[in-house]
Image (cartoon, rainbow, N blue to C red; front, side):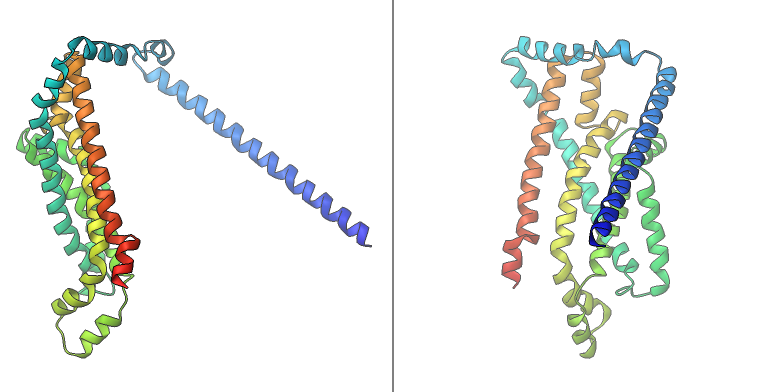
Length: 286
């Protein structure tokens, strides 16, 4: 009886294994067919040819590196020459992050079911955040540049608009997971809504707010550089000119500047985020 049961279990496991392999092979085949079909469609729509262009893939990067070495010590001067453009990009990201964070805090408190001063406005605030996140910064910036003209202002408005929705969503989730003990105590003592938020909520959520805002600042620097390609100014605009005019040394200098900036800000914000929400902060709070 025992032997029969073991044999049945072994047979059943083998059957499950064969079925798993069959489904795995079927999904792999479907994926390969879809991938090849998509490639053929994309290749037909391409003005050139992916296969023919693949052989020239490294031509442009090689030319950029060669021109950078040919420039010699003058290449380092290009770093200083493009520094003002980099500062413009950082300024755009900083201002947009600041305004976007302020709007995100307002939307988050209205959209939080447990904290909203007017519960009837909760779905309204949530739909507003959905709308601001639905459109990429590039689309909003192109529309604003068409209306307001090419300048950093449309880019800052576009990034702040998207930031308010993205951060508002994260902030509202933080709000809805707070400890309600301090709020209950403040309510029992007759505190107003603003006093409850100031002394019962903000001390709990502020480390996460700052952490998310710093992370968003990193993202917005990259977004500001990209928007420079469509006329928003900054290092993106200089990069577009350098690539269009085949200035290899200038292009590599701009890439290096952008890379160093992103890396530096990433390290600084990672350190600050760790200090705010990491183990050291938790020990201090305890």
